[in-house]
Length: 470
Image (cartoon, rainbow, N blue to C red):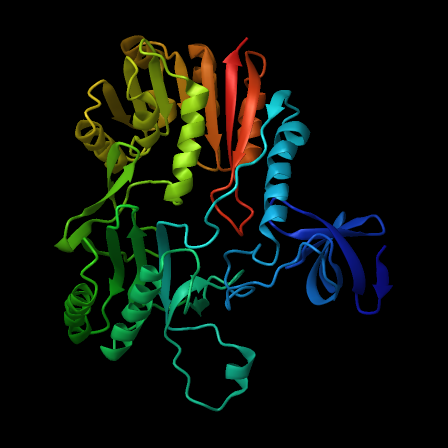
């Protein structure tokens, strides 16, 4: 029961977590969304937004903590926009991720599923990511104590966006997402850049030299660093670009790939920019079982390498590839799933929008001796037409792993035209996955759905659906 308090304050029992990781309770006939709450909490909240059918409230205090509540281990929790479920124990996180997938299929998609498998959790719940991007800013997020202080404060920051603020950056000291190497390198980059007097990017005015930093690691022990630059404030600062890279490369000999690029656009997307190699190679090596993959800066590779192996084994088991099978892998990226699943079949066909990824896929197939694989770049709805299928043969097994937005309607239509006996749909967004599968249920039976957690302490979850032609 919720008790009304003056000024839109109330005490509220929270009983659920949404697909976006926000807790909710009920007040009279309205749902109340509370960021930072945990199901089972009794909290005091203040409503800051009223809608027709729901309220949004900020958490003021915890009256009675949930048995599922945990003390966050990161000092940046609550300000940084990531890892929003650190305050919930991992078993409960998995429970709500499982529920998220089942709700998407049953309630949203109105789908009949023969069997939902229990979610597979991560063995490592910290330091699990192989790629992170950090933002430079000359407007560091200040604590209340710092705002009230008269002391001179260093405002240069290198870290993550404050939740809900595009122009403020949390200056991250320790991040529990990537290895300790990543923390050492990021902190050293900030230290050297300040020593050299280099300008940090102003997100509002869109000026300043240092813009973003990407760090990539691999299970092989190899590392990549990419520095994205904007526009130098002076010729002297431009000269310091290479001083910075040289100092870093000497301090971190464990980095095999030092890259830099210039992005003068208003947005942070650098995938369309030319990359330059300062030192070492323009790629690093990753391994999975007996396969070896070349991973470049623009390559898509599952961001949790160890759990990606678990995910790929599920896909391989679902596919149950035979020596005579033709395998299609749509949204193939650098061809990792295609090669992992299809190394012993008759033919592998991979299609991907990003040309650089397809270049890597072809090289990786050659490296791994998979000479029966072919990879094609282009917009899926344009490439995957009747002529393409006629040329390369109808698939016996079809794997799709689209982006969060799901598949274009034309792609779904072509998949239904192909009528592959077995279809495996891999997704990081169960809602769009269910939407697409609802369009296929006339022709396909959903045999199994297997949720897999790749992102502990977040609400994100992967799901793999196995379908058979009716």
